[in-house]
Length: 634
Image (cartoon, rainbow, N blue to C red):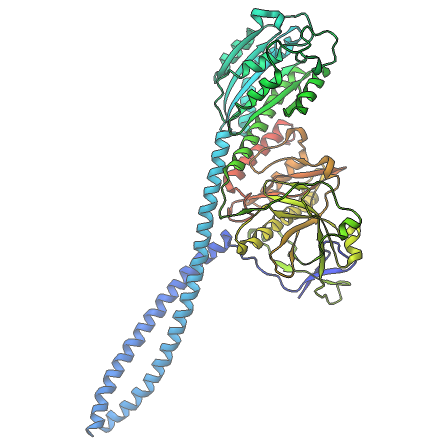
């Protein structure tokens, strides 16, 4: 019996699927059942082998007895009773041979089933071993990234007294906060208190990296704000000093706190600068390049604590030169602790991402597609010049209960009818795809696309879709599984978001919606595949990554509803899975999200981004910490 539902909004009809298939994916539940089946079959096989041996022994005995009697028959010495016995033996032999044939057939069948079950269990064990190796690598990246060198470049001129005082007492609280989300944090701190060229002997005061918060506090307590004779300060000299620090940890952060810019007329709009060409003998851009070169494999993370608008032009100019300062507002000295803690978390996350991308570890040989990013969307006649390709559409079976999530979702080929009551037919869907991708993620490319039943629907706004494909292609046998897994992740997230909105979302919190995803396959060869979804409204200007799949939350865009939803997915499924890697846009009272990741106790499900139960626990702790830190844990 087919199931009818609205799908992809390709026309005014209804979609249905005549037969749902189980994806060829070995889950933990299937492997567990396979192991139980193998054990049962092994016992049955043992019984059948024993039966076969007993029957064979009977046949051998009967054959020996029959041979003896046949000799008597040949010599005409057999008695009447022996002749009757010979006839009975003949009948018995026919029965035994039939039983032997049946037993052999059962042995063959049980052996094949047992080997298949063992193969399933073995396949799962192998997949689990490979996934365990990948997860260990990520855990190593996280552990390394949680070793942090944090250097403060702190303006110590006249107006900075409150910020110097705030810096003095912030380190212990920073460590406490960051350890809530990153338990393995090992932090070393350094300070360069800088003033201006005018201050000569008091121009710099430096504390190299130390693990002692007490030593840090003593040093900062001894710093005192001193006035100078023009507004700009010697930031270039401070950066030069930072290059001489003993950088060694994986995550390296330079945190500049300043209320006035550096020397050099191009960096500010002041008329009075004693050194309009910059600090004599020290080029700030050259020193920043030198500092960036000391970033190690994960790179140097530059953060700027903004106090006044006086520094805005300096930061803009430096950013145009390629120096990416992550800005935070510390006008209120009381915000310094939370801003630095957020910066440390962000830097740790960036270090993990950098390490993962450089590791190049893959489960099987893969080929990287050649591509060029082009953000221009085809329009009008440009669409018609692109290749028209017939495709099949695959969708997941609608989810009716959270209990269904512990096994891979079934999928089927979509057919279309005029209404739910009419018989559906397999109509050909047409696809056009932009030549070049307009965006990329860590693993996939995104293309503008069109889907429709005919040229008219194809070219309508209804036909506008986003088509996503993997950057790297592996063995053809595994390609469909990757797309089915991605579709499954999005549709499970979609289901759980609907459940959250209905039952657990506080009235003041925005709703959460995930785009539904379908797999489209080129009809002729079936080798070209995409995950298709509606276009994300406003993505070009307001797309935001709110969290990732290792416990990081973007505190620039932190939101109670997103945190509560992530916790809900964990609790609703009894700790079996958690929806993470939230990204998309906010429109009014709704978040519209795409490309989530699912962390699951069954490590072999949900693709490469599933990092298993250890990371689930890490993400849960981080989520709870954020809810508490922002006062949303009631």
